[in-house]
Image (cartoon, rainbow, N blue to C red; front, top):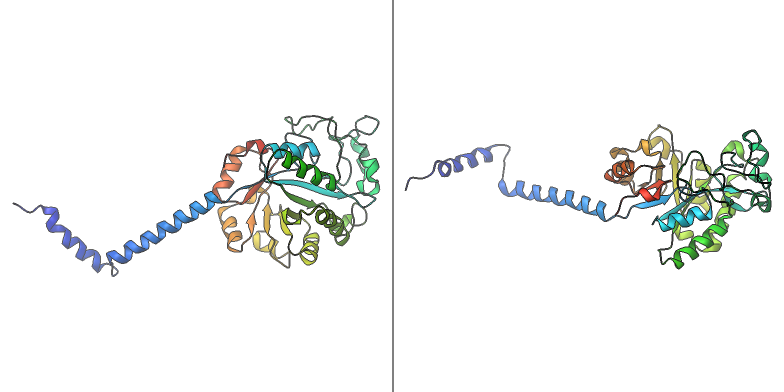
Length: 319
């Protein structure tokens, strides 16, 4: 039988390959297998890692922000973490509010009249006892920026009330106990005017957290490194998140702290594959804000972020 040409040429090709850079079939095969295993392992780990979906101010796009109805709706939608903003009243009680005063966009006075924009500064929360703060309606007017938000009469709740309500609601609905991401709303220029100084602010905030026994499920986040330094020094076991909206980069922002935060939390537009890889190399999680479209969520998940903060938890992809 005539030998096929391919059979004759095959040994020649092998000899030539062996002469190129010391090629050895066994070594290259082993390397290829290891590389493929590494890639598959990384993909499998990313797929298995649960995404921390955080309801921004509860779920601001659907319910009045920073209120108990917003937190309950977020839990119904399956969030892992309830994200909220913390302010302090005149009588030193931590409550939920993004602004240091009542916001005219969605506030009605105790008389039922809408709050005028030029009157906002008259109603600083740090100058009002909580009993007075509770009388204001921050839901029935709706929010023009969020047309899907359901208007309903509600108020700015105390942090203690929010935690008690969320814990009880999760148990009643047979849902996992939620995590809490608490933002300290403070800045140097506001010390003593819009809020206490960082030491007192953190002490008042963590006193509520510890009294409710949820410190293992709490993150303290802030744009102001001062409060994060206090948390790290006084409560080192509590998770921290550095909020970032500038474009100075990871290294410059991390240098604002004397320690590595648990989470790096940038504006979602600042997130790149390189940023995620650099954070993960330092055992720092990446949880961007505020991610409000399904397309943005999918893109960030492909970059392997650890979570995302959204006004619309109903848009989260199935996991």
